[in-house]
Image 1 (cartoon, rainbow, N blue to C red):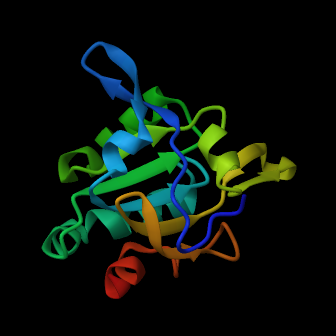
Image 2 (cartoon, helix red, strand yellow):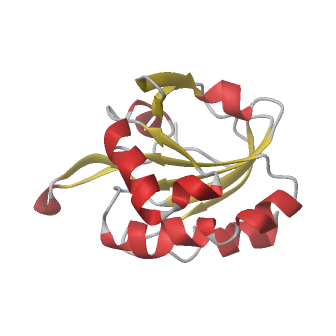
Image 3 (cartoon, rainbow, N blue to C red):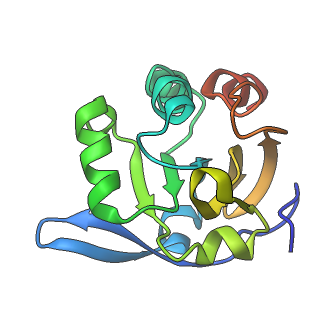
Length: 162
């Protein structure tokens, strides 16, 4: 399946850091009955992800809240330890962005957003995209043509169409 507008997000067990360490979280528990923004990055600590994509959502959290978005979620094909440290070092943790690890790319593959770039060591990473969903149904989906850019998937671009 390649994710499209109108699709229902598949449930997936992702990981996040809890008080006792990594803990599973069902995506459904964060999306059902809620308005959510989800963005996915090819990798924590990579250039565009750290310098453009994540900050674009951090600086727009008040705007998302004003439009009734209850959760802003970042998904990456990394482990939860990396995502937790990335959130802390960038300040994203303080903004309330929910960082979810998809270490085996299970969700990423289920929505058809995986890609590989062997030259840089990326195997089954996520394409760069952002979506807005209501009650788990995709209302808006912005996918970048090139993982090295952050334009249509930026926080400002998604916020503008909600």
